[in-house]
Amino acid sequence: MTLTQDVKQKAKETGFALVGITKPDRLTDLPYGWVAKVTNLRPPKELMLDVKSVVLLGFKEDNRAFNLAISSPNWKGYGMHKPEEQFEDYLFDYEILKNKACTIISYLSKKGYEASYTFKIPLKTVAVKCGLGCQGKNTLVINPEFGPRIKLIALLTNAELDADEPYKVDLCGTCQKCVAACPTKALKPYTIEITRCLTYAAESPCTTDVPEDVRMLEKKLIQKPTPNSYVECTTCIDACPIGKTHS
Image (cartoon, rainbow, N blue to C red; front, side, top):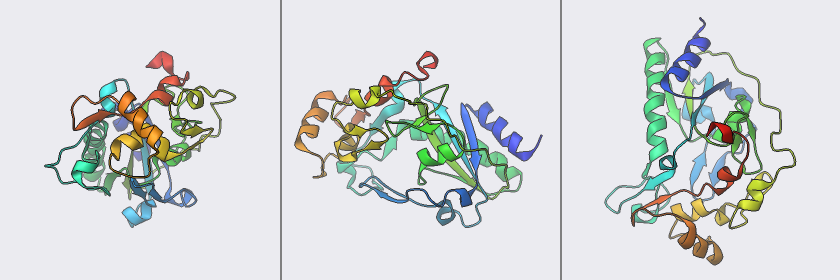
């Protein structure tokens, strides 16, 4: 098998349901920069100077626990807010993705290549470039088999891997179930007003850019197993009919 085939097989053996590959020069036109106060998205070459391939990995989301976020005043945060003001410290799905990605990084390292995982590139638009699906009306990646029920992580490597073709089909068609289901009306087809998103409100409890009506709905609708944890809103995911037979 070729190195590309080996990497894809290793990803599947590790538990990733989806794997696609693209090249950094195909990603120059993506939306980089700050996404509200959440994260600063950067081009792959800013994160790894000699990057030659970008591998996008998708993990099937089949449990609400994947959407659990935990914070603590005693932890040191790495985001825009103080630890007691934000929930970026521990996301359960991130830990699973990172642990599984490290298996592939180790494999490439043994082959003599450098590799590292990242969440700091525009994962959703890169996933489309890698052929994993389209970006749907809920702004999430919609895969024809799993719908939007996937979690994404990227690997940057200086290994020369074969690129996949971008995904070009709009799977949403005339469906607008996700838009209609959003309790805060944060969605318009293919766009989101992030300050009206319940997950953004939950992860930024002290920010002043969340409208009062959204704060009220957050208190009512967001599940909080403990004072320092919450479960991300998945209403727009749950509403999507694509891939439900595989959930």
